[in-house]
Amino acid sequence: MKEEETDSIRRILIRGTNWVGDAVISIPAMREIRRLFPEARISLLVRPWVREIYAAAEFVDEILEYDKNGIHHGWSGFHRLASDLKNGRFELAILLQNAFEAALLTWYARIPRRVGYARDGRSPLLTNACKIDPEVRRVHQAYYYLNILSEMGWLPARLWERDDYPLRIQIPVRDQDFEAARATLRSAGIIESETIIGVNPGAFYGAAKRWFPDRYAAVADSLVEHFKARIVIFGSSNDVRVAEEVAAGMKHRPVILAGRTTLGLFMGLIKACRLLITNDSGPMHLAAALDVPQLAIFGSTSEIATGPLSRKAVVIKNQVDCNPCFLRECPTDFRCMKGITVEQVLEKARKILEE
Image 1 (cartoon, rainbow, N blue to C red):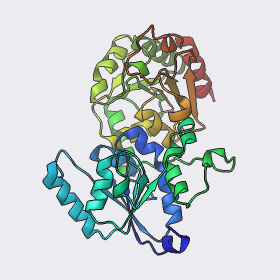
Image 2 (tube, rainbow, N blue to C red):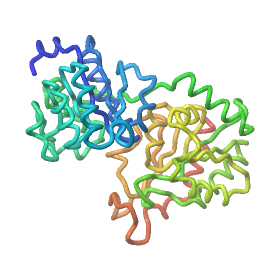
Image 3 (spheres, helix red, strand yellow):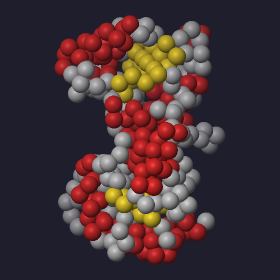
């Protein structure tokens, strides 16, 4: 697509990614789309559970939901959504999601220009099927999404090799979510002036990404005693059990909010924290985007590929011969996580809190 053609684009649809971490990591690409098409109206199509990430974002004009469990269920729901998109008169679709379905949907909606990676057998449905640079697999995943724009000629190639290209990932919290967070903390007996430390002991991908509940509990108790901190344990509904395990191992009673928040409220609560201690997870990426200090504990995964994009983030990792393995469950002795001690995490946490 030539530069003079991009100047004429006025209606753009971005098909966003489906999971919280990916949704945050793709933000630099969305910011670039906004910059490249300053006069266009940009609509973002996402699944309902990630919508609130972008609720206060300035780089999109409209957020559309793809509710496959509701109004868009089945073929009739798919047809309804495609018809709605067709009526939106989009001129360009940029597919950050990799799925075949994303290309089929925009083809069925008759969006005339459809841009995305040539993968999952969807190339015939795209007007611009972009190749995947093998080197992009060796750098942060944010560049994977940006590289679509490079393949179109809109950005320089191999941005990861440039020293003058900083990744910007910050997003704001809606005022209403921050106020709801304050109210939630007050109802739990936590006042605004107290030092609030968030603990996120879960991870959706699997147990190989989770540091041990008893070690989280020991760190949390020590921070209560040294800093008079209030501990709030976060997580999704799937993390309630591990949150309760952490709480059961503590001498000082924490506030458990795992499974009890919307995503918007959760963002407001993270923003209220002086520090978040977390596994490699969606909340880790949200804390980075919200510019909240954090300790990110890595085991089976790679901080190079999916680490938090924040100067306020400190990664803690025990490098062993078998990580990153990217497995959901450790098949051996879990040495990567066992080598991360309570004392290591406490040392980093104290340094952040004392600053």
